[in-house]
Length: 150
Image (cartoon, rainbow, N blue to C red; front, side):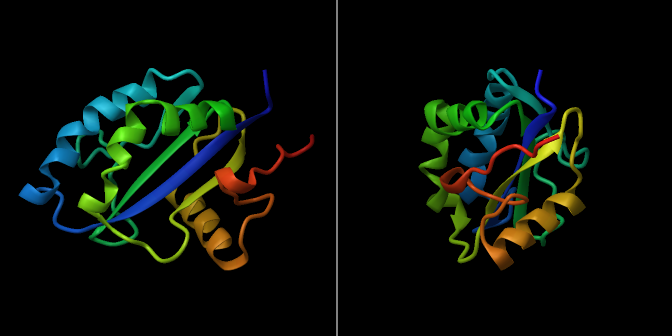
């Protein structure tokens, strides 16, 4: 058993209100894709928004922003879910639903085993990578950092 697990946050800026016809297909696929994540090898936890009924779409970054945050056993397990499942097919359509964000919109970081990050912590990690670029406390799939020692 590892002493560290991988947390991830990604944000997206909606092109239209979440309940609009323009986003209906995205919303219709949320349960299927979230269930796929939960059933994927290495999945540990995901943020569930009580307001929206469990689709992890809390909006603390602004009214037109959605947030997804989860914890995984390893970089490999998250990578497999993101790029080797139906998640990749849905996200290939992201330009239909989301505006392009000019800064970094996703961040990975190591958390102690059993820790569930909150949105404040996630916001700090995203701000860190946006300000300083990838490093040991905030990174991306392109520049994965080793787990902390100890």
